Image (cartoon, rainbow, N blue to C red; front, side, top):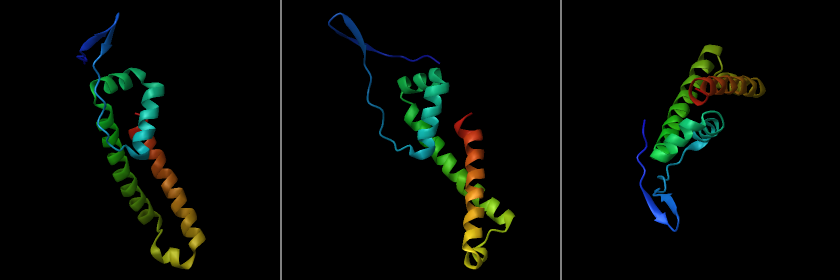
Length: 116
């Protein structure tokens, strides 16, 4: 993938004509993806940043991760029998179970979307 950049002269230097990227909210998952790309896939990060596609990518990852988190949390809660009835009967057991479910869902998302 080639990046077509134009330049303008400022004194003795050629400076790239870069436009400010769109201000798209990226959320927590998009922020984690940006950090991962910047630290471990710097070439991909730089290419996406210079082509203006980074923020759209991060917003898409955030949307996908949010949807996946909600779906996994619902499915795991149903599979493990964590219901509103349990919440009413034993709140601490419900909180403990939901925390475990959320942590497991987060690990799946980090592995499949953020760190891939």
